[in-house]
Length: 464
Image (cartoon, one colour):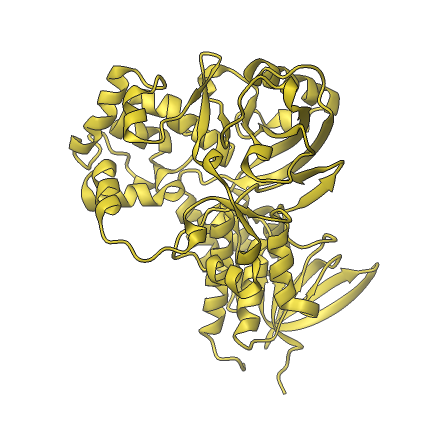
């Protein structure tokens, strides 16, 4: 007999917690996952309302051949439900001087694109010949921001018109805010290895390539929406996953941990050898206040970008823009309130009723956090004005839904890596972390975080 009820307790039913739990269970370990909300999946949610299929969080997936999520899609059968984005997924627009301009998708388009000036294009090509070092390096390499790296390698135009809107659209942030090494480690690795990002990209483009799974060739979703992902993963856990159970305290015992759970207004206690905190940094820091206060400081230093996700449905005839792409990014220089727009019904089928289109607009972020929590009527007016002038919409939308996320996207600000090292060093044996604030904010990176945590647990013997 062991001195605990379950070997591993996973706190948090987002994608990282699900990944950790299913990996442990798949390797024969006893595990229990608890989630305080009434459904699993964290910010990944799909809603069907008035004929529209709404994603309140991530809208799609993109996987690399090495991503462990790929194997689980095959294991759960979700690969059979995958819907690949068509040509629209390869085409993106940017707002420049108030007009929607296609971003270059090929070398030829890169030569002819109006996004960059002739001098701006020449400066980008010069990157291949710029020495792989900073003539004015910061004292600590970790403090180099995305803005600093991009400007020294590609020039100010590329930063202003390409990277700035990309960072706004993906991270709801600004290039001046984020750490280059932590946010784009592949690019810094290219500079280190090849002396140039362009030379590194060319080497990878023309180098040997392993066989690729069809799901690694395009962005994709599922027939039932992104919500099918947590549904499929939770199916592997069955009764080993529970919702509406809030962890209210964790104490360390000689054989592991004693966790207090509040369920149906009653408190229950669960003894486990390991505990994995898979919520966001804010939630996890609250649970560590008593058991590991040394980890709380660096955790609370990680900022989160708040986001409002506004779903708008229009009659197709009331939108002038072609909407033949993934969406539109908005550079800071354009002085707009919104972060970007996804053309959701252009990407995947069954996202809008016949004759209608679905637009997903993002507002708030690090550049305008208060906007995410403004009154509905103010938010709708501000967003509607930007959408009307950018896409040429006419009249009020036929459908409207607002989803707000207070802690949407963790920000990898300079010093992020050292903060993660400090908090993990402070943890007692048997207590682990998983989540998007550790090593990547995408769905696949969050999933990998959970898998890596599970592997560390599996490296220990099953019995105490």
